[in-house]
Image 1 (tube, rainbow, N blue to C red):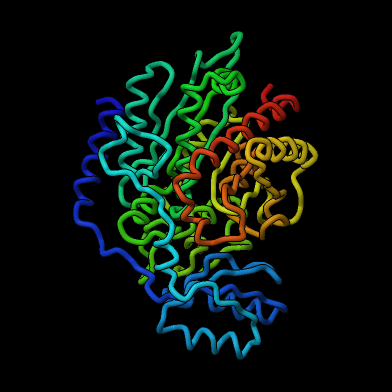
Image 2 (image 1 turned 90 degrees about the vertical axis):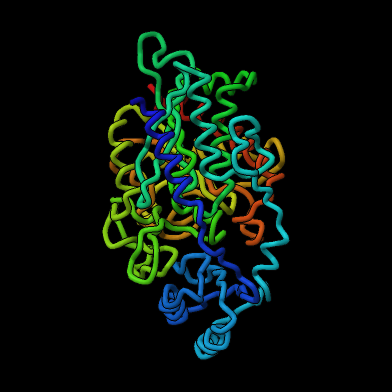
Length: 430
């Protein structure tokens, strides 16, 4: 049986098993606070608080002194939470008295199931099975150009499905084309990331813009829009703000799949509490998602020269390392590529990206996919995009309005075109 048929049968089985959905999580009367630590003692208090209860949700990691941290608190926990802050003299600001109301004010326009094969577009967000059906349709309609690939499996038995694009064949002048690997959606609630990944797939196959045609024809592309399928499904059926995998750990669920890769795992910027959104897992590659995806990427060793990971939000472009302030040995080249890429992202709509090495630009964070690709797979160019919006607004962060999918994706593709050009000029594709 072909890979396509096997995946289709598996997909149908998953859809059938999901016919009875869990009760949707709501955040009625939950409050959201922004806090800031001014000294090491206050930072430790916040670290102890993170993951201490599933009624207190940290939307940002507790890593750096002076960094703003957004926290969602259940109504019954508010008095205890404020008492802890008061005793430690931690300053806070109330940002929302009703998180659910704030979330409801943003229209994400989620498509109706079953429309993907005929009406897939970028004016709305799609559920997992719709995107997978669309990917299968692309492979059927573009034989020899689009190949369905399975990058791995999930705890709940889903496929991490993607496409390999080889427009014009896999070689140029008798040499294998350089490879570009792109994964998105490793954090489930960041819906714009997989939407942007599918936009890029479509543009690589259909665009008549010369620079995009060259991008499609000169490289072999591996694109996986959903690196965390179980989590993404859960954001549609149950909890829109879910981030992690769905592996059970006692009374809590999931590990952060972007803290679970086996490169300086859990050294810094991750939690050992299973209830935390940055839980690193009980061991490196404890999650079947990261383990199986890493095996797939290992099978491509030597074929991939540029690794891209799409996230949201904050409008950052980031490169290794996350576990240390030490810089990569080719940091001068990273800076050249960075400068060209953020200049390009700005041209179409004036969108401003910042960034740099992960540790200094945002916060220490060990166990990320880009660090693993760079540190263990000899991929000398590895970047993470944090897409729209800027960090100034949470509620339009994870819930970016659907009307922004196209502009966010257009400027991203502008940036990737410039990135590939610079990476090529530096000799990394030779």
